[in-house]
Every structure is written in structure tokens, then in C-alpha cells.
Length: 480
Ligand code: MN
Ligand code: MN
Image (cartoon, rainbow, N blue to C red):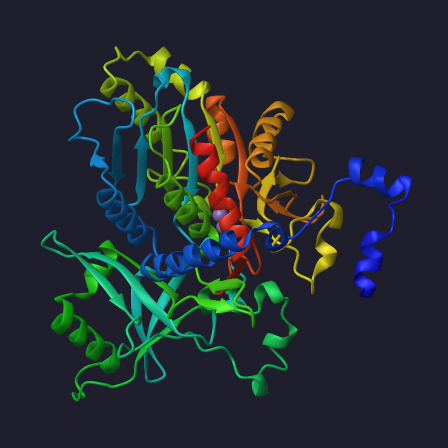
């Protein structure tokens, strides 16, 4: 008989039993999973990593989502004639938004089940006039997109992804820096040896300034002394020869500098994923994958993917646009309904939604910014956030006790590992997501996503257990 056997036979005390009955237990999702679930989590994360590598920008993500939809038998919204229970349609809007819809048994006027995520991520956009020459180098000016700690984005390889609409109106795709043979791009930081009196004195938030995020583009001049900017001209010549571009074409371009390279497993046990753009492609992919398990749902399920979340969900492809109203009107009409404004509003109002976005996991090195009792931890499951916002719940969408109750019951009934947390300490800072904009339609909505380490850095980290838990949660929600 071993020592362990002895311990397990010890009788529990009265208060141990009481504790078991009353107190909240926090347990790692890894410990809650069956062996089969662990295997499935790893398998799903392999698919997720290849999605991440193909979908670094919002346009690329939308292309992947469209390809998925076609493969899974969704038809384009304009082509489908009517919606009957189980009908699958998709819509792509301006190459930056996507919607996947599976018609439910009940009419959409009884409300839909919506999961909404975003497919844009922080990055460096080339300015409309990016190219210049200085000190023998061709350089490119950038304007960062979303919230970044600028010092994290220097001395590392970048790839350029995007589109250019040329003078003749045609648009070309550009991806440079992802294949083994491609060149990459870089922003060089100031060397340590000469930082003492200047950069070292700056606050970390200003260690690099916006106008210092200049990308190296080349070094070989044309051989003609009558030309002033010889290196810049050589780069323009290259761009013309290879892509047919002239300098003015940058004015009608969207070229994003994103970290080059592929996503990686992290840790000896490969339990985590490190990659660029996991905010919010981890939730986007998990909700996309969850749609696969839905056959004929009770309520119409809508999986939405938006752009521009990182700059406040603004613009014609952000979640503050009227797109959702159009979509509901279209779906009502396709269901053979007479569409009135009031019906669209009722359908939106009666809907239930999950804002599928990431939040901060506790970083063991920087625990002070969190309230340990109300924070999320890597590997402890899908993260439910009743509210976000900042100091005093300002600008928050605060889900009702009743709605949290419904979602909590769904998670528990389906044995899905979950945790409930806030972003950080009350007065430490904050942020918000799409939830607040969708709550304008008076629907129930709550954040349910994945905790992330190093959010908005070029190499964000998530636990595979949390990604899989979120996937399970989305699948259960879509069938609810
Ligand atoms: Mn996000
Ligand atoms: Mn973000």
C-alpha cells in the first residue's frame, strides 16, 4: 500500500465537505479535459495555426472565411432564393466583413444567436506617400494601426501584405516576406552605445515615436549623377518592373507591415501558441470552426467577422456601421417575411450574442496590474467577461445577471471549462470590445473569448486549452 492510497482513504472533515459544497473551485482546463478532448484541442490548434499563417490581415482572413464557407456548402446571400431551416448562406462585404448564417427552426423574428469577432489586428500601415531616401537608404514611412507599444515593433523582420489600386483602376495583391526566399523589411532601433543621452531618457511609451517607425526598403542607387534620389529611384524602378507601380499608386493602396514568419507552439509541452494577430483571430477561427458542428439550429445562427475593431469599430467595415441592420432585413426577406423596420428591430432586440474577443491573461511577471480574485489565467478555460470598459465601468457593456446566468448554465451543462475575469485592476486602465456597439440594439450580449499574454505585441501567446474551450462554448451557444 502506498502513501497516496493512505491519504485518499483519509476521511474528509465536516468543513472540508462544506468547502467542497459551497466554495468556488478553480481548476485548470487541462485537468478537466478527457484524453480525447486534449487530443482534439491539439488537432484544432494545428488547423488554427495554419489559418493564422494564411490570414494575417483582415482581407486575408475574409478570403479564408469565404473559402471555408464555400467548402462547407454555404451559398452566397444574393444567390440563395429563400431561407428554410438548415439553409446556409454567407455574405462578404467590401472584402473586410463576413457573415455566415445557418437558418434555424424558429423564425428569425424570435431572435438569432450571434457570435461576433474581429479580424483586424494592430500593425504598421504604409503612409500614402511612404517612400523617401536618407543616408544612403530607401525608407518607408508608416502610421501604426491600433494600440501598440512601439518599442516592441523594431529590429524584427516584417512582411508587407496588402492591395494597390493602380492608375487604371485595377487592384493587385501584394505579399512580400513570407516565403523562404523572399526579402523581409525592418525598422532599425538606435544602438545601445549611443542611446545614453537621448533615447534612454525617454519614457517607455516614447522610446520609439510614431514618426520613428520607418522601414528600410533598399540600398542600391541607380548609376546616374543627374538624379537626386538615386536609391529611391532604384526602388521605384523595381516596383514598376515587378508590379507595374508608380509612386502615386501608394495613394490608393493599403499595405500593412506585419511580423513575418509563421505561428509556433510554445513551451516544452507545446501547450501554448505564439503568433502575430491572435487578437482576435483566435476567437474568429474558434467561432468559424464551431459553425461546422451546427446542423439545423433552434434559432438562426449568425457568425460575424468585422474589421476596424482595433481603431474603435468605426468606418464602413466596423461594427458601428449599419451592416447588421441590412443583414437582418435581408434574412427576413429571404424567410418570406414582409419586412418592416419594426420587425428588423424586434429581431435584433430578441437576439442573444457573444462578443468573441480576447482579454488579458495574468502574466506571472507583471501580476500587480491585476486583481488576482477577478482575473483570467492561461489554461483555465474560456473567459467570460460580464463587463469591460475602464475605471467605474465607463463605456462598458455590462451583461445582466440573467444573461450571465443563461450562459453560465450553458457552459456548466456542457462541461466546458470557463473562468470569469476582468481585464485588470479597477483603476489600472481598460478597454472595450464590439459588445458595447451591439448592445445599442438592446440585444443581450456578453464577452466570451480567450485570455492572451502579450496582447497587441508582434508575438501574442494563448493556451491551446483556452482556445479549445472557447470553441466548445461557441458550438454550444450556436445550438442554444
Ligand atoms: Mn480584440
Ligand atoms: Mn485588440
